[in-house]
Length: 386
Image (cartoon, rainbow, N blue to C red; front, side, top):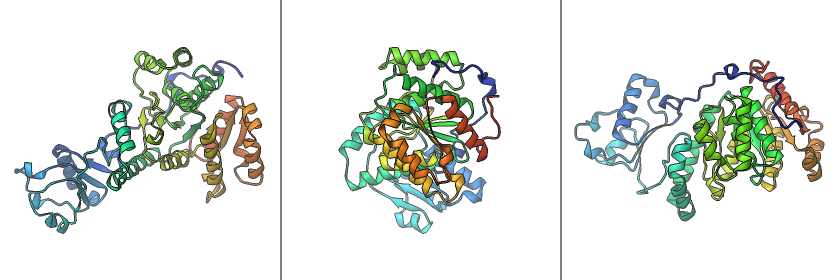
């Protein structure tokens, strides 16, 4: 396998597809207000469009008693859920007006209803959230964590709907100076350039390599190679060095989906948006289910193998062929010796997704099969790397 990106099919950044992942409030499925200014904007949007009344509105931690200028009684609050709010009227009045009230008295380091995290926001709150997760296992705290995960899942599904999202899976212990790390970064770069959305578990190893490739997918191949070398030379600080030199993550086609369940695994720095879950089970299901354009499996241990058989199960029970996912295994020696690939090919031999199961060391062969599937299923309209 070549140690460099193939130049025969290279493109300039101008050839990249325009794919907007804007985070304005209108893109979020759940509209949340955490202060009076946001609450007033929420009301203005509802008043401007009557179809929005009763749809996914959450108001959290506002003391309406402090805002005497607001005629709360006259407001149309149909379908709004008020969490830990205080009112200038008896609570039953709110309920009579078809609003819902939840009191749990919790002071949380995270927002229960929210959109995906930016890297900057997560860096500020990550340690406090992890400490809360480890130390609070009571019913009310668990319910809040579940609500948080539901809103993260909902927003993740919403922004990826109809987009060719591709999962990059593999071991968290893969070293940044290893050939497989470089291969994962180069493949993700190539696929990101073709218009795929790169989705990983958001952690170290193969996941970091995938997001590294996605991070550089709007940059030149030589810049990717420079980033790969920085990571190889400085595994502990390479991420910060790359961000300092090339800028904050800004490629919308690059998402990390980590979990607080494995709190010792720090989220890598390269995703533009981060969907961090408390529940690892929900996180894994969301990540695999949303990888509609396929999954690439790099060498990994128990977690990676669990994901392999979970995807095989999804393919086997898919209600229609269009919903089956390619399964690409990178690392022929590793997967042949493990016996996993042989099991998958034997089981899928008479299935409709057998033609999309591939074992290879060639990233162009892997990319070509994924592109063929995406074009065949209408996920991409044309090959943008012509």
